[in-house]
Length: 93
Image (cartoon, rainbow, N blue to C red; front, top):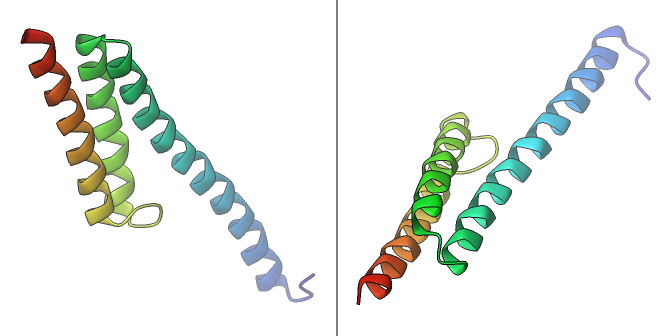
């Protein structure tokens, strides 16, 4: 445990930031999973709305750079988009 006042404050800040980062990371993962579940269930319209939500979370966290690197966010968005596009093509065919 820190003894210096500034170190105590830094510890408190780190705890708060760690919890927030963990929550944000979980939110990103869950939003991506929801998109994949909707596609698997054949609900393309719902998947598209969930995709927009997931993109919002990915972009927000990539901009901060704490949770995701910008290229990681771009890769995740691209893969989700490809899954939706493939499901649309197979549904119409």
